[in-house]
Image 1 (cartoon, rainbow, N blue to C red):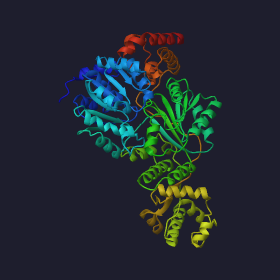
Image 2: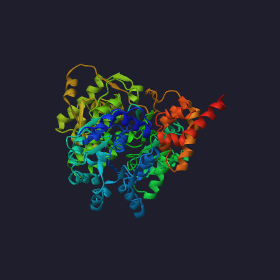
Image 3: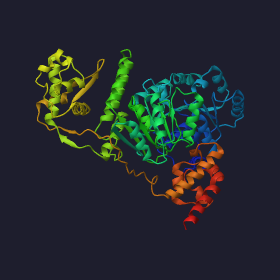
Image 4: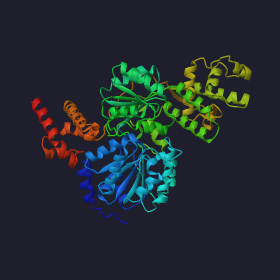
Amino acid sequence: MINTICEDTLRSSLKRYFGFEDFRPFQREIIDALLNHEDVLALLPTGGGKSLCYQLPALVSDGITIVVSPLIALMKDQVDALKAAGIPGTYVNSTLSPQEIHARLQQIEAGLIKLVYIAPERLLTSHGLERIAQWPIARFAIDEAHCISEWGHDFRPEYRRLAELRKRFPTIPIVAMTATATTRVREEIAQHLHLRNPRAFVAGFNRPNLTYTVIPKDKPNEQVLRYIRERGDESGIVYCASRKATEAVAEYLRAGNIPAAAYHAGMENSERSATQDAFLRDRIRVICATTAFGMGVNKPNVRYVVHYDLPKSIEGYYQETGRAGRDGLPSSCLLLFSRGDFAKQARLLEEKPAGHERNHAFDALSRMVAYAESVTCRRKDLLAYFGDNLEQTSCQACDNCLEPRERFEATTIAQKFLSCVYRIRQSSGFAVGLKHIVDVLTGKTTEKISRLGHDQLSTFGIGNEHNSKGWEHIGRELTARGFLASSHDGFPVLSLTDLGRRCLTTKEAIFLTRPPAAKAPKRAELQLNDLNSEYNQALFDTLRILRRRLAEERDVPAYVVFSDVTLRQMARETPTTVEAFRAISGVGEKKAAEYADAFTQAITAFLAAGE
């Protein structure tokens, strides 16, 4: 079947409902595929406009689009945003009374609704499937589709049952959307949903508006407080590994006069919901959360994400940092890294039964540590993990590119370390961990060294030029650079690679880097087209106050009125007529009718006051 919706209809609907003149990369192609009734698997980076890909087809074609979403708490805000744009949508979930659900079902069945948001567990009840079978369904949109995959970082068992949709509704197309999925995860999504010759769209993983920084963890509460204070009244998320840590960090920030709150799975549902709502509506500035918070958080103006503790995987780290800068404006991501965090997580993994699951978790954690300790471009490292690449040699938006660490000639030092690894293996017939190698190099007489006779090795005590911490840094960098391999056999051990063996027999120079300092990260000056070009900051602040008042009156988050990107354009172009206001990106037909007078009057008054 060929799409018969003309270009003019699509573009006029894009402007009418969403306020945009042009499509983002891949949006047009995905929309065409959906209008041709094809199955689609789409990977677009967070903030890349995934929702519009199924919302616009729903508006210009017959039938109902059912959106499967994992987060009940966000459905109301998603539907509020639709209604603010003049789009007929609703949600059905457990937060509604039976009377409210009945009223919404009547609206749907009367043909008054185009998009229905629903959680998988409600959709897949026998009653739910029987009810929707009576509806004129145009397509199923599976949001956060990586939750289907056991290889993904956020696997949800209830998502596995979505395979039933193809069996029950064999002719209805399915679009699976995600921002985070390796090739393996994408293959499992397509296979498990029984997608038929799906059109696959992979826009890439690069988030050019994000700056990535890793610093050593040292007095972390103070580090986080200082970092947040430097960012004025911007919104941010601090991710912590435990419930206790979220509460402690939030309390510390509040003591420092930062409006902050904790969020974790141990809180009552009502308290969690109230906290999330306060954050979305800018009543609190910072959420200190476990990973229970965030997936699908539709707050475009989160300006920073801090990882107080080490994430368990690069997928999780990428997904969580992706909650910053969804509107495309410059935002930053900070990771506080300590080997102690790694050791804690490794010990917990060692308590799990040996097998595939534990090995996979160890591998994911080891890759995360390698990223944290990398001395090369962090953006390149992230993209390479997902099979993507960065063409330029320096991104100029990560700590390693902005402030490259000092390099020093370390051929002899490297050979000492590698030789020690070789001698231990030759003497004992097995590999050992980093700490034991460092103890041998620095000449420590531990019980284990004496028992194994490693105090008799030629490399015992030859490393007096560095302390233990210095040698540990050298060992980790040699591992990251491929001279050593780390493997897990109950605990991590180091062994020589082919490159490491060659280093012992050649005179080729080796350069290593100095350890990083626990200092405040340098801020990148990102150039992102005109998104962050000059605008009147005072006018922007005035419009932001107006936006918040209007949002409070309507009981919706501020971004539902207008995004920061739209406010910045207003503060740059100063529209004082309705016609000029309509030309601003993000101003659709309904929003122009509702807000033009208030904003143009505020801009006119501001300009008059400045004369």
